[in-house]
Length: 277
Picture: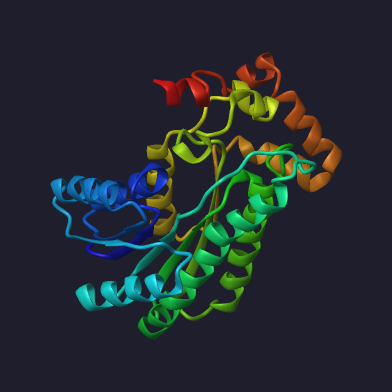
């Protein structure tokens, strides 16, 4: 493979899984995250797989740090072939709660504006090369909102819109844009949320593993897919939502019933059970 892959939010969860999945394919990695210690641990794991790695502690909400990150990647490798925008946060809370507006602001800054800044810094390089792929991590909630996830789903919808707009703007340039929509995934993103705060469907649902998402990202880049929904059966929910909000809401409500979730193969260890383990 030998491509140069830049992954933000690479110190844990999906970012770590993406880095390891690309390393297994022979890519050269540029890893960025705020936590220097955890980033170093992931860099060690990548090197153990035989991959060349550059680790750059960086906060994507800091424009100077983003500029330094991209400059470091260009100086080390001379190019970037794949950008995986994964850095972000998630908050749980009802619209009526006093913290809601602040949750929207914080999530937008970390998960949207950081993504935009990194993309705008990398894009000229990809266009000059006439090749490359930009992967933006959204969520199933980037297409279908859930109660108590308003602040997160607002931003994930924005990520989806940004990705769709950018894909059309770079059409014909050799640059590709892929947006990934995973369902609930067993990462630390929502670890601070109490189980009782989670929407009913998420209390019983078996989450995806970070490794499943990481492998899906590599496959999407290899095949040039523009949009990936994980798991595939989640497309039923998105189709219902596209036809009518009532249908989408009815499917979401049905998933809060263990029997329905079991029929769809979405039961097993829950999010909080997996984190506790």
